Length: 183
Image (cartoon, rainbow, N blue to C red; front, side):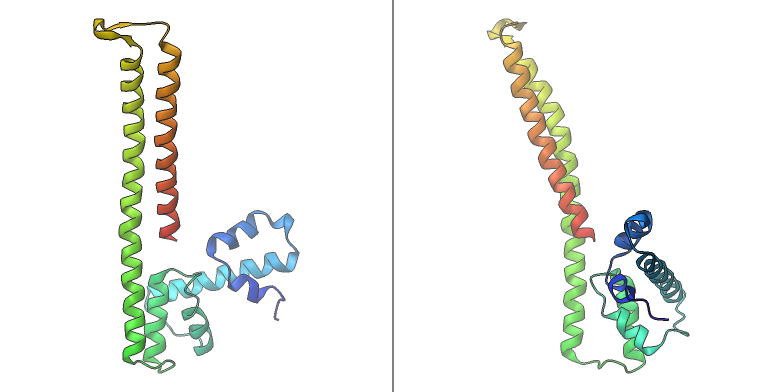
């Protein structure tokens, strides 16, 4: 029996579906049922694909899920597309092969950029901590004597705290962008 929310839930990511289940009191009962059904269907398809078993997946289901590039992981989309080609449901020509190669290269580029941004974020955290300590120690000293000047302590603390906050903020931004690219 077709649920009015089936189509909407099929367009959601796994994370969005889990949010619906976690906050089921905020949704209509039919929406929660549709989310559960969609998760079960995706698990079934994912298990079948990982075992190389496409028996039981209709041509319509295969094409529907092969076209959900924004919802399903790339590896599942690639397997579904290959099976659709094997069943002669989609044509295999040079234009489609170029499109598929472009998608694969884009996925690889995103992964590389994501890794770089993640590492850059960690480096910014470390530099922020080391730099803040260095600034505090050197700005709070009086001249070449190396003695701490109590009048300079508040200024040194503010400047080193701002330096730390700046680096941590940009580290978080780098790691946030990294996570977005991985999706």
